[in-house]
Length: 475
Image 1: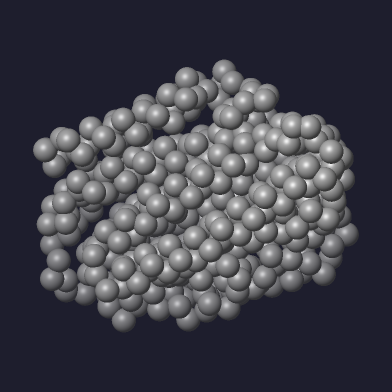
Image 2 (image 1 turned 90 degrees about the vertical axis):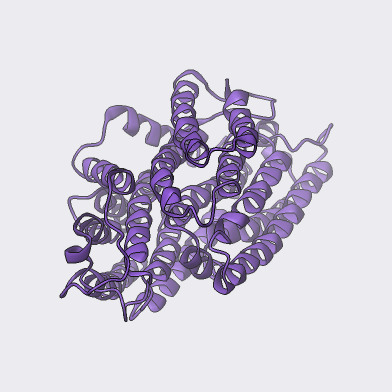
C-alpha cells in the first residue's frame, strides 16, 4: 500500500500528459490528491516501522506524511480554479510536475535508506523547478536558476555527508556496510566518531539548504516570490517539512551514537541565525510574497531551535511543523489571489485588499495573526511550548533573545500586511474576484490552525509524542 502511495501519482502524471482536455487535466490534481490523502491515512493507521527495508513509516514520517498530503490536497483544489484563469499558460506541464513532486516528497518521507532519501530529495528539486518557472518571465527564470544552483550544491554536499557516514560504518567495522537507517541506528555506537561528525555537518548543510535555514536560505525569496501561490504553499509547507525530516534522520543517528549534544547545538545555532536574518529582512519589506519567504526562514529556525533545545521543546517543534504548514497554505493561497487581482505584489500598488477582495484580504490578515503566534491560533500553542522548554531548561538568555526577535518579526510583518489589507480600495484593471475554488482551501487551513489553538485531538497528541520520543530516546 505504501508503494502504491508513491507510484500512483506517477501513473496519473503520465495520464495527464496524454489527456487533451484542459479542465479534465486540472481535475486530476484534486482527485489524485484526495486519493493520496485517503491512502496516507490508511498507511498511517496501519503501518509501523519496517525494519531492514527501503521504505517504511515511523512516528516522524507518519506525521510529515499526513501534513504534506493534507496540504497538497488543499492546494490541488485551489489549482483547479487558478489554472482555469491561466488558460493562456496552459497546464500540460504544471499538472504532471505537481504530481511528480507529490510522488517525490512521498518517497523522501518514507525512505528508510540514506541513499534513497538523497535520490528522493533531489527528485523534488527537479520536479519543482518547472513549477517556479511557470510564469515564464525574466524574474521567474532567474529564480528558477538560483533555486537549481543552490539546491544542487546543497544536495551535492549531502551526498558527501552520506559517503562519510558510510565510511564511518566501514571504519567502525560494520559488515556489511549498510546505509539503511534502522541497522545504522542499531549499531550507531560502533560508528567512527570523526567521520560521523563530518557526515552530520555535510548533511545538515546540504538538507539545510533545501529547508532554507540561514545562511542557506538565499533561494527562498526569489523562488517563493515568483512561483504561483499554490507552488509557494507547497514549497513553504511541504518541501521544507520533508527537508526537516531528512535532517532529523541524521539527528536520530547522532543521538543513537551518543553525540546528540553536538547535533542539538548545531541546530540551535542555525535556528537562532535564521530567526535573526528573518527579523532583519522582514522590516520594511515591500513585497508581500518575499515577506512570506522570510517568514518561512523564521519558522524553519523555530523548528531547529525546538529540536536543538530538546525535551518539551521537541514536542512543541513537532506541533509547530503542523501549524506552520497549514498556516503557510492559507497565506500563500490568499496572497496569490491578491497578486492576481492587483497584478502586483508590491506595496506601492497593493493596499485596501480587504475592501477589494473581502475574503482573500481577510484571510491574509488572519493568516498574519496566526503565523506570528497570536492567540488563539495553533502557532501560539506551539511557540509557547517551545519557549516553555527553553526557559524550563535554564536557557534564559536564548529565550529572551527569541522573544525580542519574535517581537521584531511581528512589528515588521504587521507593517507590510496592514498596509496591503487596510486603506481605501483602488480601481483595478483586473476583473478577478474571489470564488469558491480559490478560497475554500485557505479557509479550511485557517480553521484547522484555529482549532489546534483551542483543542488538540488526542490522536494528534499521541502522534506528536511518538514523533518527539524518537528524538529523545538514547537507542
